[in-house]
Image 1: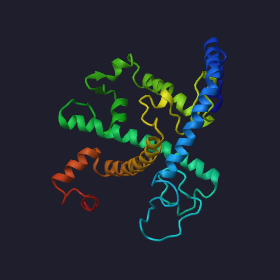
Image 2: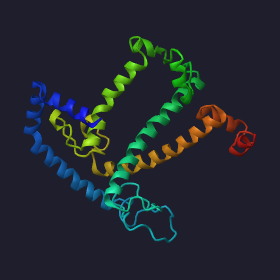
Image 3: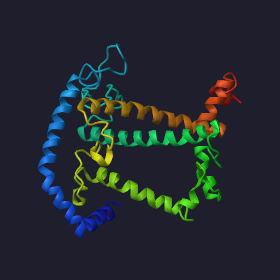
Length: 272
């Protein structure tokens, strides 16, 4: 898939529109690089002042003494010194695993919202779905169900093509971020888009509200993102196990547990 992506970018870059974008970027590049250098210095100072980085950061065993892996020095966000299998001993492996963790954490957080929100809207009566359970939506769609979201039909939005048009839109939306992640932060420069980092691209394209514009906020949000992402990944293990055992969604399972915890728990359901 890498060659078609590069070919598509090169095709756009060679067009008059692409050449105009490149020319504008080249004119602004010295200023952009100076801003990146200044931001990098501010972020380094913010990490040095933060309790979440460095050798004195919180560890996964808390106050207990332990021999933590020497390759985990607290340079990365949410580094609690946990690598019992030494999967990230080598710098290249650490960089790769760090990138993969961010990628899966972001997908897990988005997916968790997608699993919970339809159930919540259905349960509160805000709207009604043909199928609110995350694990059954695909089957319902393939079986011809017209899945209305907030009263708007997906088939009407997609002009009668349904899944094919939705998939095409997904490809367009994910092309830029995934291409930059796979090929490096400079991969989109032929299109006039300069990104400071492939994992944290920032800029108006990926941080339009400028939530991480200040160095301390940026470093704090990096830690929070991974903490919440790890919780979301663990939550998905629970969502999947619940779906296999109860054939219900996560919100309905939580409601059932609150209403009758004695009969709606792991031990009771597995022993049934």
